[in-house]
Length: 290
Image 1: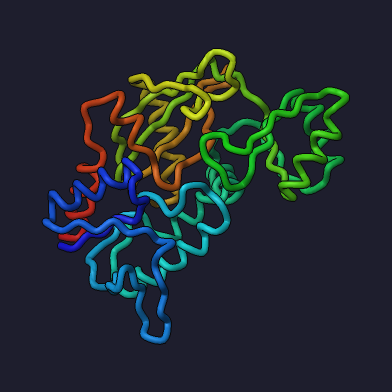
Image 2: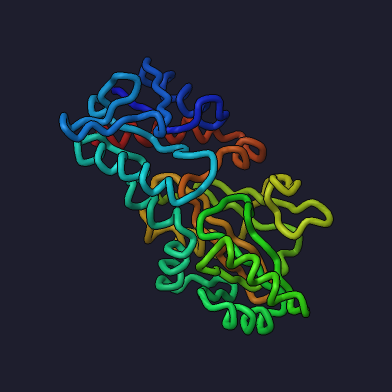
């Protein structure tokens, strides 16, 4: 089988996944999607002179170093590749539905998944009323990971100016009530819709979020079965092949923050004996055999 990995050259998780694909198939191909060319005259997607339609499958690990609307255009290239008969894991249309925070949130709420109180608006007056109602709110860009670009705005006299400054960068304001996390949240991992493992992210003292970018650290954790079931229901509507559901235990019960478009390997690696890269490649091979 010929299996390519869409990822980042030098990125440890992308390289690890490409290594595991090579170990299973004898061929290694790590594809940087921004270096491909879609040649519509000849109906092909080229990478380093090779038509990727000759592959049996591609596994999408990363399509950019940071989330942005540009990634939607790159997913269109993979949608074209899938139409040419190449199996793509996860389906580009499934990734599109979770890449945009607003799209992901709407799908989760329509599925009845509990989330922190959330308001989306373009109106600064409504944003100010929302901050006053929430007392303390997190303004989240529609495209971001690891809390990048997120801003906390509290109900203070400075709130109107802070909202205007944020809106100057983000016309659509995604506003979520700041929730007491108890010092940690959970990454609950699924492969092919089946539960794989869970890890906790514990925040650094003084940080408001648990991300490793803010000094958070991973710990092993086995959540209550009801929390795993909640995460399973959260990821189910999207049909992703590999994903991580962010869940926090709050005084009001467990709540879901988001479903990851790609899922991460590091939390699994640091808290378990599992090899997520090998498991993912084996899953893909088994799917191709069916």
